[in-house]
Image (cartoon, rainbow, N blue to C red; front, side, top):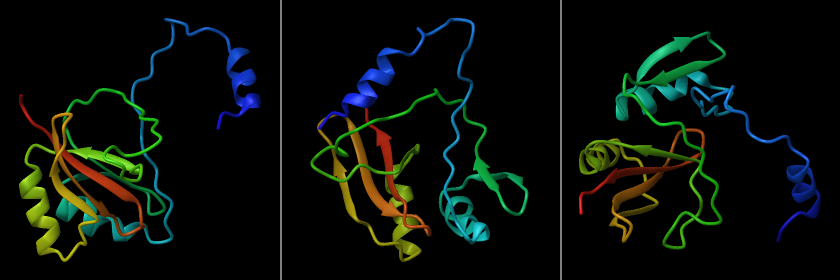
Amino acid sequence: MRDARADANMASLPPYRDAMKVKRIVANIASDNVAAAAAFYRDLLGLELLMDHGWLATYGSGETMRVQVGVASQGGSDTPVPDLSIEVDDVDEALACMRAAGIVIEYGPVDEPWGVRRFYVRDPFGRLLNILEHRPG
């Protein structure tokens, strides 16, 4: 169902200007326990702690990534839309790490018809994560 007010607001926006470029997008997850992220995002997914202010911990890697925002009505294959999609170089290794840690696999692993192998898990904050690897072919 489309929101007519949102459509009207979008129509009144100024056109995109080449002078301004988006450099990066950071996903922020609300939590009363910022330290709980370390065991999942650092220890299981191998991300580095890049910044720690106590109230905000930022995890990342040195990989160069394209700026992207996904907007979806479903997660593909009639699954829920995940809160985050995390592309890895070895999805089966990521799956093994999750299983060894006792993390519940909510979907998959599955080879999807659009060329990714993926599975869904929830992080310690209840966010649904799509862990995926693009497959050749």
